[in-house]
Image (cartoon, rainbow, N blue to C red; front, top):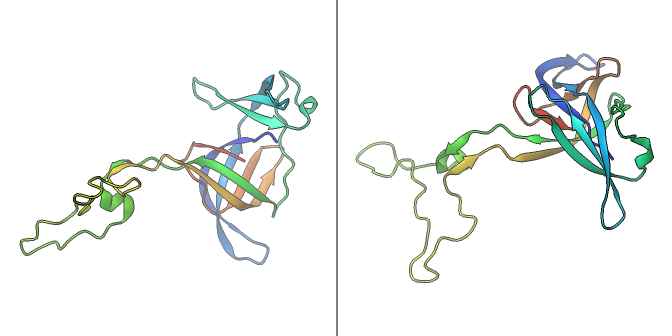
Length: 183
C-alpha cells in the first residue's frame, strides 16, 4: 500500500460529540505523483512516488503494492478515503536535540549538588576491571538525542476534509512543525 505524505501544521484543541476537549494535530497532505514502477527480483512491483515538500529537493519513496495498475506513471496520487474515528499508523522523525549529556539523554539522577561533591552530571562508572576489561555494548552514554524514526499505531482520525486535504488526528505526532510524516 502506498503511504501518503503529510506535513505537520501544528497542534490545537477540538471538541468531541459529547463536548469534551481533546488535543489534535493538524496535518496537510502533500501533492505527489507516481514516477515509475520497479520490479524486484522476487516479482513484486514497487511504485516509486515523488512528494512535493515545498523545498528545493523533492522526497522520493517506493512502496510495494499488490495492484500496480491502480498507480499509472505520471498520474497524481489520489487523496485517501478516510473516515472520522478510523485508526491509522503514522511514521515520522522525532525532533532532533543534538549532542546531549547522559543525564539529559537518559534521565540519570546525577550526584549531590553541594558540600564538596565532585560528582554532578557525569554518568558514573561505565566499565569493568580485568574481565572483560571493556565497556559493554548498549551502555547509556552521551550522544545524539532525537532525530530517530518513530511509528505511532492506532492514531484516531478526528477530522478529514477530502477537498482541502487536511486531516486532524487525536494526540501528538512526531516531528516539528513543517516536518513530514507518512500515513
